Image (cartoon, rainbow, N blue to C red):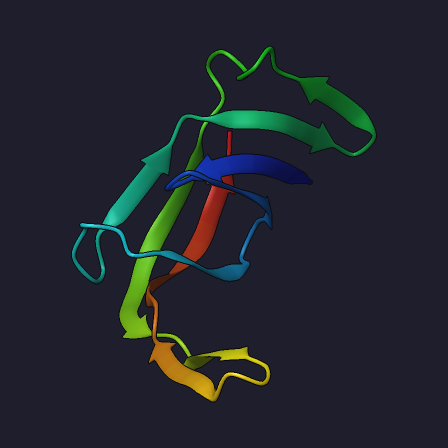
Length: 102
C-alpha cells in the first residue's frame, strides 16, 4: 500500500513505516502529524485518484528529528571576464516516519 501526498508544497510517494526527509515543519520532535492532501492511494491494486485530493483520506506520521541537509555549492562564472562567484547553502529538513495511510 502506498500513497502520493503533498507535504509542505512538494509531492512524495510514501508507504507505511517509511522514513522520509521533507522541508522543515513547525511541529516538535516526537509529535504526530496528519496530512489530508492525499492525491493518489493504492491498496493492493485498487487505485483511487483524487480530483485533486481524495476526500476523507489522510496520512499520519511522526516527526523523528529536525536537521540540516548537505551543503549545496553554487558556482557562477562568466568566461573571459574574470568573474567567479561561489555560494553555498544548507536546507533545513525534517525527518518523518509514516505511521498509517487511511
